[in-house]
Image (cartoon, rainbow, N blue to C red; front, side, top):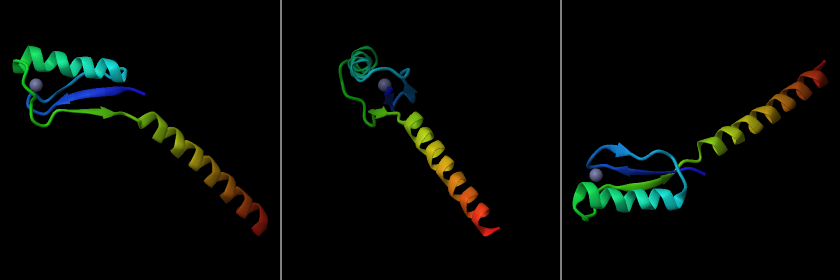
Length: 75
Ligand SMILES: [Zn+2]
C-alpha cells in the first residue's frame, strides 16, 4: 500500500512509497524546507485506491451475475 507525504504549506506531495519512506520524507522535508519545524497541515495519507477499485470490480461482477440470474428467471 503506497503512502504519500503531503505538505499543505508548500502544496507538495511525495511520490507514493512505503510507510517508512513517507515518514523519512516528512523528516527530510521538515529539515530541508522548514528548518526542522513542523509545517501546519502536513499529513501522510494512505492511498487505498487500488483496493477500492478492486472492491468495485467485484461488486460490479456480482451485480452483473444477479441481474443475469433475474433476467434468466423472468423469462
Ligand atoms: Zn513544506
